[in-house]
Image 1 (spheres, rainbow, N blue to C red):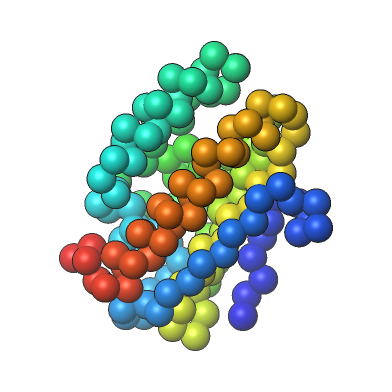
Image 2 (cartoon, rainbow, N blue to C red):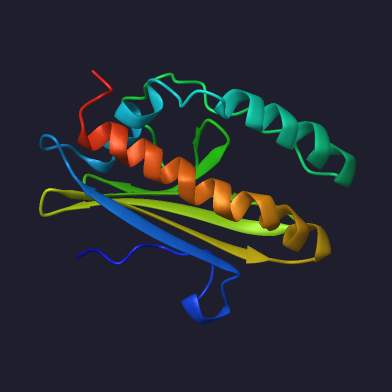
Length: 156
């Protein structure tokens, strides 16, 4: 198994979630990202609009959500939607978002016919802690739904 990249050492993280599923067919980590993002979950756009409307009042940059546009050859240092690409290889895609309130790292790994999404957060202040209260349970549900759609091949 590939070790996922994290926002900080696991012992000091404020949030950690890893979930995996069997892949419906062989694919790279980027292929999996593209398949998952090609048809965003219903309601996710509204959730991002609400997030942006609240967070901007605390100096957090709006992220707008996922575009659904496939990418073919992204490079480290470029962005995928609102995430910065920190690492990319056939078996791993590490994406991050960092600001004064928290550091977020989402790591997508592919190994032995399984896809794993690992998300980690290191909080820096009170707003970051408050932000994670609704985000943590929502994140778990969103990842579960995305992986379920992928494993059932609902994306086609």
